[in-house]
Length: 75
Image (cartoon, rainbow, N blue to C red; front, side, top):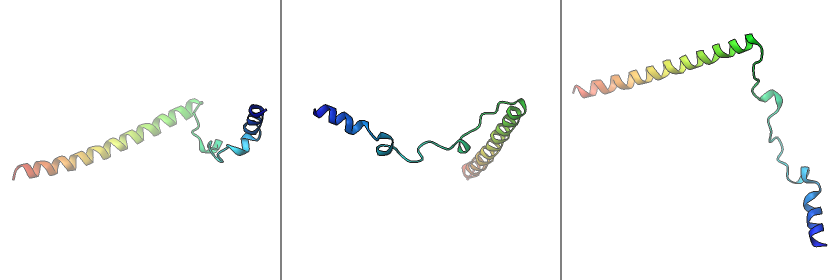
């Protein structure tokens, strides 16, 4: 009798007892995969702009750090 009671206790009302509210993101909060040709090209352009911006920032940062190191080596 005890195993049946155990299974009944843990087998009923599981969605309320062991659920985490708002665990999965809403449909509007998730990433939308582009399917149309124009959407794909727009997404590729956005990724290219983001990559070039990050590259520009990285090169500026490396340029300022290397310029600072070169000035201190000559002293």
